[in-house]
Every structure is written in C-alpha cells, then in structure tokens.
Image 1 (cartoon, rainbow, N blue to C red):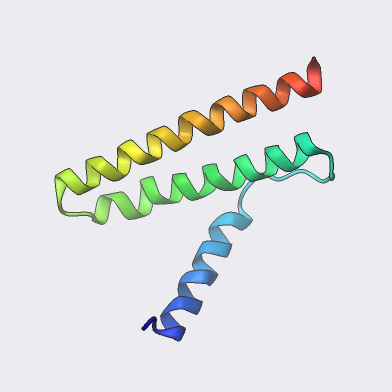
Image 2: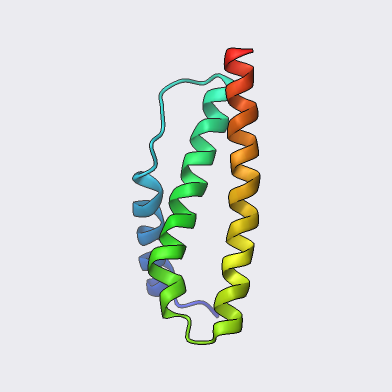
Length: 88
C-alpha cells in the first residue's frame, strides 16, 4: 500500500518541476502541444539532473537514460511538427 504522506510529498515535488515549464497562454491545439512538450522536457531534465546521478546500478542508470533519450526524440519531433503547423 502506498504511503499517503510520501505520495503527497512526491506529487508536490512533481508539480514544482512541471511549474517551471515555459508554457504559453492559449487554447489552440499547437499551444496545448507546446505546453505538454515543455512539461515533458522539464520532467526529463529533472530526472537527468536529480534522479539519474543517484542510481548506483550503472546498467539501470543507462537504461533510464536510454528511455529518456527516446522520449526526448519524440518530443523534438512533436515540437518541430507543431511549429510547422504554426508557420506552414
């Protein structure tokens, strides 16, 4: 069973990381896409800088890094396509 206090503390830390994302105002699909991408990048950056260094197992750390690299590649494609919608 999940410890409610620990869950709430984690949720607060997660929300703090997401809050630093560079979101823009608006409700157009491209704006929503941009904002989701910024949140994903903020979370990925946090994992790379604060979580990965604390993973002692090198194989596990490398595996997490590879997953984050794949996520980053997808977000870059989405960002590029969203910009094409705005400028195309």
